[in-house]
Structure formats: C-alpha cells, structure tokens
Amino acid sequence: MTGQKPYYITTPIYYVNGSPHFAHAYTTVACDVLARFMRLDGRKVMFLTGTDEHGQKVEQSARAAGISPQEFCDRVSAEFREMTALMNCSNDDFIRTTEPRHIKSVQALWEELVKRDEIYLGKFAGWYSVRDEAFYEEGELIDGKAPTGAPVEWVEEENYFFRLSRWQDRLLEFYERNPDAVGPRSRRNEVISFVKGGLRDLSVSRTSFKWGIPVPGNPNHVIYVWVDALTNYITALGYPDTKSEGYSTFWPASLHMVGKDILRFHTVYWPAFLMAAGLEPPERVYAHGWWTVEGEKMSKSLGNFIPPKELVDAYGLDAIRYFMMRELPFGNDGDLSRRAIIGRINSDLANGIGNLAQRVLTLVNKNCEGRVPVAGSLTDADEALLSAVRGLIGTVRADFEEQALHRALEHIWEVVAAADRYIDEMAPWALRKTDAVRMATVLHVLAETIRHLAILLQPFIPGSADKLLGQLAIPEGSRDFIALTGAPLQAGTVLPKPEGVFPRYVEKE
Ligand code: ME8
Image 1 (spheres, rainbow, N blue to C red):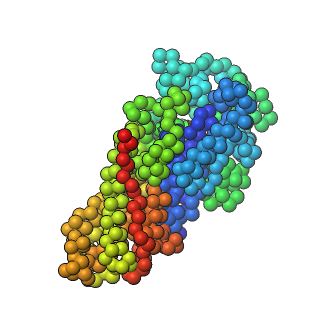
Image 2: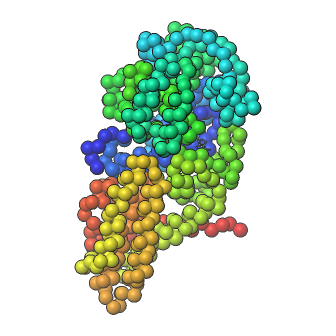
C-alpha cells in the first residue's frame, strides 16, 4: 500500500554492561520483521537500534574489567552491532549514546526543559537501585529490595528534578485520546493505573558518579541515564533540528518496541518529557513478553544468558528467527528450550512449508520440463486454494497492525495446511499418465500458492524466502506486496533445479 505514512520503529537501546543474549536478539528481530514488512508494503521505513552506554552500572563494569568506560563501551557496543548483523536485521542506523550527536541532542532537550521551567534544582533523598537504574518509593520495596529483586541504596544528594507531577492529568488525557498508545491492551490498563496512583517529580541528575552527559552549566551533575537513553529516539532523526528531514519525516515514532520491564519509562516518563518540551509523544509503545530459558529466569545481571550465535550456529539463522516469532504469542511470556526449537524446525519448517515446496517443485521439474506449467480451466478446489492464499495479505496486514506476529504466521500456516490437503486430494503425481492438462493446472495452482507464501514469509525468514523465490525464478523487482495482487506466475518460465530449503534437524548421537 503505497502513499501510506512513513514508519519509524525502534528497539530499546541495550545496556553495554554485558554481552548480547538471546532475548536482546528477540526484540531486535521482532522489529526487523515489522520493518521489513512495512518496506515490502510500500512504506518509507526508518528502523533504529543501538546501545545505551552511560550510567553507574557501566562505570562499575568498566572498572571491574580494568579499562576505561569508553573503551569498555566500544568493545561491548561492537558486540551488539555484530549481533544485529548476525540476525540479518535491516536497521537503518545504529545509535550509541556516547556519540557527539547524542550528547548535543540530550543537552538541547535538557535546556529546553529548563527554559520551560520543567526542571528545577532540589534535594533528593530516596531509594535507588543501580542494577535497575531506577528510583523506588519506600512503599514499593519488598523485604528491603526493589520490586525487581534488585538491591537498593539510600541516596541523599542535591538533584535536578523534572516536574513529572504536573503531567499526570495530561498523560491520562493522552492515553484516553490515543487508545493505541500502549499495547497490548492489558499493559495499557497497567500504565493508566500507575499514573492514576499519582506521580511525583522525578530526580533527573546524579552527582555520585561521572560517566554520563554533564548537565549544561553545572558539570558536577550528570544527566539521569533514562533522560539520556530515551532521547536517542529523536537524536537519530536529527534533533535538536526539528526541521531536519529525518525529524520531519519520521517523528512521532510509529512504534517503540520494548520488553515489559521498561514499559513505564517509555509510556510515562518519555511522553511527559516530550510534551514538556513541546514535542509530540510516540504513537505507540508495545511491550512484548518475557523469556525464560529451560524454565529458568534469564538476565544479564544473573549471567545465565544464551548468546544468539550459539543458537544460530546450532540450528540455522532462519530457524531461530522463525522460532522466535512463532513460539510465543507476541506479548506473552514463554520458554526457550532446545526441544521446542527442534519441534518448530521439524514440524513447521521441514515438514510444513519445506516439504510442500519440495514436492511441488520436484514434480514440476520432473513432469513439466522444469518450466512453470500452464493452468487450464480452474475447478472450485483450485479457486478455493487460490482465494485463500490471495486473501492472506489482508489478514496478515491486520495482524501486523497490532504486532500479532505469531498470528500472522499462524494464518500463513493455515494456507500451508490447505495446500497440503489440496495436493493430497489432487494427487498430481497420478495425473501424469491420465490427464496431463489437469496435472499442469494443479501444479500451477500450487506453484502460485508457494509464490504468495514465499513473498509473505520474507520479513520473517528473509534468506530462506529468497531461496524459495529464486526457485520460482521470481525476479528481484517482483517480490514486494504489490506483486501479490499483480500478475501470477508466468507459464513457461524456466525454473532452476529444485533444492531443499528447510532441512530436518537430526539430533546428533
Ligand atoms: O533496559 N525476555 O537495556 P537492557 C524478553 N538500556 N526480553 C528481554 C529479556 C527477556 N528475558 N531480557 C532482555 C535497557 N530483554 C535500557 C533501555 S531504551 C531507551 C533503554 C530485552 O540491555 C527487552 O527488549 O536491559 C528489554 O526491554 C531489553 O532487552 C532490556 O535491555
């Protein structure tokens, strides 16, 4: 659908106090799937990811590693950049909060907030968790710890404060007027009840450590890491130049994708900072669910994380991308287990789409001289399968509008199953001797079905979809979603010799 609004999608920027793990790759891949989908659907897309490099945690990790904070950041940020490439993500930019463009942007936002009397100097006393980089109320503590289980310390210092309390009503009004601002729905209710519970002014500077962006005009203070981090989303568009091409094309963001752990920062603090600075809040923040590993909680701080490379090496890139998007209903929590990965590979990929494509392409290769067969007159069964596959783009587009990525795959696989039933019923292998015209028609319908499926699978498994489209000899320029409503496969086109695209995973002895 051309002529639609530009689409700006972001991942959280990841802390560099530890190496990337499976769940970081998960968030980034989900955004990649969305970005690729929107591009194929004719939209102008900006997809941003990057690293969050300031704060006490990073300062402490660098010290423990015996190197300077900047050196430490360079090292770990590079690992995140490699992870993005390893997962075949199509980000348009990779931002680091230690870059000059970002420091300038954060200081400009700060000065704007000061100018508008949204930031003032006061005294802070309260509970602070270094691990969460967050302040907690006395009443929020559980057994003397943060609700996340992180240790907290009592902090008293002179701080700058953001007048968050002023924004309570306007935030509630904002959620009211924009029912899609927070997704999924259950999270929206959570955010609204948090804000209804009352907002206190937020401490937005620290003096107890140095690794941060200095407060303009008072360099004893560094800017609170969340003010710093959230601003990355506008830095990358050229802020403070709000007339820049990036900013004027892409702000407000279409979607900030986050894990549920950082929802509050994105749906309360961030829109408040922006509105206070006279800028528009993002259109939507979506919090996906939480992964455990073989039933255990995973986190960088706990150190039990799985590097994405280990899984990609063991099972293949697209298998992992597919598993990520299919295994968890997007938005729900779930478990990463090797058994589940192997199950998905063998039942959905190898026995599902892989087997279907391989059967059809082999029959075409053997019985139709390796050319796209000519379709004769169509029966009701042919029409039914074609109409199911042609209807998919509409259904899948609606799934993408609400980030129901797993449902999009379910819908695609319903057609895989329908095509499997069709091929078994039509038994084209038996038609060769009795009715070659009918055989050609059946194989044409199936090849056309696979063309649609492969085009729609590109956002999820770009490498494998590319191979499938290559086997159908679809030219590069005919692989976007317009091609789904355009001309069907051209009869007579010579096809390359078929090769399996989705191998079965066989457990090593
Ligand atoms: O929070 N399950 O960075 P971070 C699902 N720098 N997702 C998970 C996960 C899990 N077990 N563990 C991590 C920060 N994630 C800040 C963000 S944004 C302006 C600043 C994913 O390195 C999930 O997306 O702790 C989560 O929100 C993010 O990693 C946290 O990454």
